[in-house]
Image (cartoon, rainbow, N blue to C red):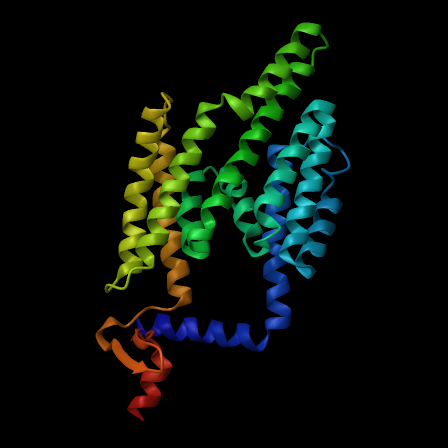
Length: 303
């Protein structure tokens, strides 16, 4: 464990010293993954699908605020949607504007959480998304998780409509319009996933806020259980079959990623928990301080 902590501290120190270089590189990698995922689930517009366009957008997103990446991702998805049909593009614009105005406009720092869901779908581990989002965004991750599901299922609807419109006929155009309306109104699979994701994020976020020892780890463990049970119950309520292999594998991967993130944030040393009490003219304050395990600090104390 001590050698792992030393490695983590070394990586942390390098990141702090080279922050101006490393942060843009990491943002570029994440942005590139996002735009490549969009091309994977859409891919109808020739201009937006060009690799050089994808790389250029990733470079711009790496150097600009998170809200810009979300906006550019929306522009790219809109181009693909309009390439399918005018109706699909119009509906996407309405959906995107609703997501932006209701949430992203006020909480731009959570824009990445919305885009995380389609990325996990492309990686075939969608049920890892709510566990990771809950850990990094807390209660604020509920809405982004649900919005991300809506964006992904809209892309699936666009794919079906594009297939129908490949053969020009009035019947297929009528069927395409029906498909478009069903994705927003009658798509039980989408609502099932939304419920399961929301319940998982809420459970993990609420348990992680509690003050008992190892609350964060209990929250992560409970998250995988709730993720599986929530998916089953949501499927039962909505009368929809749930792909259990995808749920279980995604939950396990999400738990592993959650532990990695938790380790990066710091391992808590509950044996040396301190409770501090102080007061001012109006209140008494009770503070519980749990230190993080740090091999370097231990070494300095020992010296």
